[in-house]
Structures are given as structure tokens and as C-alpha cells.
Length: 478
Image (cartoon, rainbow, N blue to C red; front, side, top):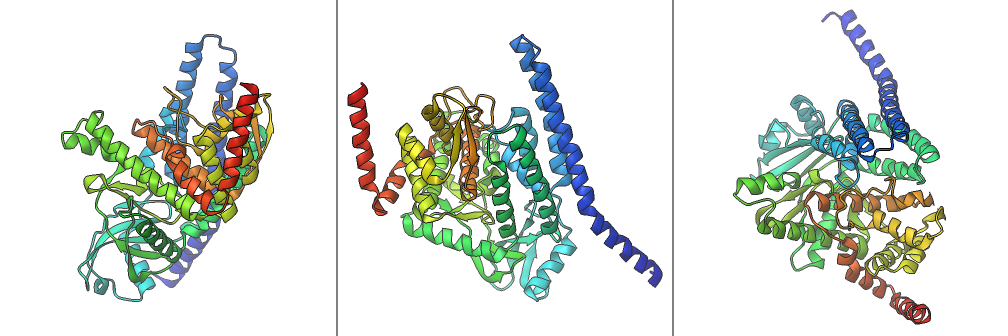
């Protein structure tokens, strides 16, 4: 190529790179405004319809339309919006039309070409690619918003490994996306939702920055792996082992774990001749959920350092229904006072203790205002929606932001950023519970772990005095 043409092409590329964030922001706002206004128009129209079945049909049609538009936004823009799809594509949080569309986006981000992957690996390890790997699958096992994973075999040790490689340029675009989402959050919390959404997006920004540091991720993986090993005779979940000396900021090599993605569990059972809705399947699902919940209860309440991204794409079911937990880019360490305050709330939820839940909210730094006369009960119901996986009988969707939510009666003025990772984790675990067709309360399963954490912190006596106070109140009023 002549020099002049090469320089012209370089100039075009640089201009394109400069304009890409502006173009991306414009696309987001046009699409987001379209989705938002279509729902507001449907809300207005539905208000004039008296027949309940007709209103329901209107909303079903709107959800189908909204699902298609949201799918297009997330799949075509990619980046952070693929993470949004992971959160929204849960059967307990979004309409079923949205779930069916968005759940297909797990691990569906556009893949970086193999030639680029090869260059990134060689630059990071400062070695020839063929000197590192005996075998390297060109097609990625999965591709997400930040990185993609390939199966490979190391040349020196003949070990099968998973190689996680960062998408070049992804970090800059993610920061553009988070700014747009923060602006949208401010708009929604001002006009539509009585909740501090902006703090949620600030915590998301912090976590995303962490996700681009694979050295940090490797350290987190080893810390959690070791914690679960020393805490249990047999760890409730498997954590991949990091390959020593094969970690940089942009490439992470770890043990390859073979298994079935949890979202494909029903199909795998059917393939093996097991009825996915039968007793054997129900027992297997119960064990899977129990093991996963135990691991999270120990991480959050016992150690305060936990894996904060249990979406279905990060969970594998291995031999004998063993659970493997993947991707430690999003981890969270809770401050000691927050961990104990949350333990107090877990006990309150498990015991249906309204007063203790209110006390825990204050201790956690969650500031609320009452829109209802029955504040204690509504506050307790809000705590269940936010921090427990249980669902009332016959209910499959229990979003904190639904029309019948306690958020319509209790406004959340301030919510600590550190708690959003816990909130998101609980919402994802609830999605798994609903997806498996089970009824499950993580608060009740975590009660003993929470009590133990409070006891070790010297707060058990306070717990006893509360029980005495409740006993006195029962004698006084009943």
C-alpha cells in the first residue's frame, strides 16, 4: 500500500476511534428512550381500560415488544449492556418475554479474532505462542463483555487449561456505557423509582474497573478457593486452580473444569433419560442449590469476601452434581461492621422479626422514608424482596421494583454502595431458585452461619436481650 494511502487509512481509523464513544452514546439514548416511552404510553393506555384480561393482554404485547427492543440494544451494543442482560434476564425480576430473549445472551459477546488473541498472549507472556501451548482451540468456549475463554493444553506440563484473554479496547467503551447508565439511573430515580439507583451504578463502575485486572482476579480466586477448603471437609463448590506464573493483567490461565452450564441442566437430564420435572431431578436440583447457597453463606457471613457474579453462565454442574463456580472478576469484601449488620438482618428475616429487621436497616446505613402507615411490615417485606430468595406460594416474579413492591410504600433514600454486590448476588440466586422450580430461603439456610458470626463478634448477648424484649411484648399485647 502506498505511504499516502496508509496514512489516510490511519487518519480514518483515528477519527473513527474518536467518534465511536459519541456514536455509541447516541445509539443508547435513542434506544433507551424508545423502550421507556413505549412503556409509559402502555401504562397510560392501560389506565383507561377497565377489563382486567384486556389490560393483561396489552401488557403482554408490550413486554414482547420491549423484550425485542432490549435484546437488540444489548446484543448490538454489547459491552456493559451484556451485563445488564444478565441481571434483567432472570425469571423473578423481569417479565417472561424479557427472560426468554435476554437469557440467550449469556456468553454471546462478539469474539476477538484468533490472530488478535495470539498477539495479546505473546505480548503479555513475552514468549512465542507455540512454545507455550501444545494445543489451543481457536473457537472460544465462551465470550463475554470483557474477555473470552479458550480451552488449551500446556506444552511443558501437558495440562488442560482455560485461557482467559481480555478484549482489546473493551475497558474504554465500558466506561462510556457506565456514564450513560448513571445518567439514566438519575432520571429513573427522580421520576419513576423510589430507590437510590445512582449508588448502584457507582458500585458497578468500581467493580468493572476491577474486572479488567486479571492479577487481582487470580488472587481473589485463590483466596476463596483456600477459604472454602479450610472451612469445610469437602468444599461445597469447586473453584478453578490458577496456573502459577501464567497470570498478567490481560491474560489468565487456570485449571479447565469440565461440566454442564446450569442453564442447560434440564436438557442434559433429559438426554440421560431423567425426567427434568421428576423426583430424582428435584433432589439433584435441591442439592445443587444447597451447595451453592452454603458456599455463599460462608463467603458473605463468615469471611466477608465473596464471589459477586453468580449468573447462570458462571455456574457449571459437574460429575455427581458437584457445582463449579467460575469467573472471579467481580468479588467484594464487606467491611466488618457491614458484615455483622447483614448477619443481624439474616437472623431477622429467618425469624420473621420485624423490629430486628428495622434495627438492621439502620445499622446497615439504609435510610428510608415511609409512604405507608404500616411501616414495620412493609419494611420487612422490602428486606425479603431485596435480601432473601424466598417467594410467596404461587409467585414467580418478585421484583423490588414491581407495582406491588414495598418500594411503592417505603422509599429508599440512601443505600450503601458496598451492599449492592450482596443485593445483586441475592437476586441472581433467587433467579436460579425460580429457574429450577424450587422454593428456597437463603436467610433460613444461613441463619446458623449468621448467628455464629454474631457470637464470635461478641454480639450474642444483644441477640438474647432482643428475644427477651420480644417475649415481653408478646405477653403484654397477646
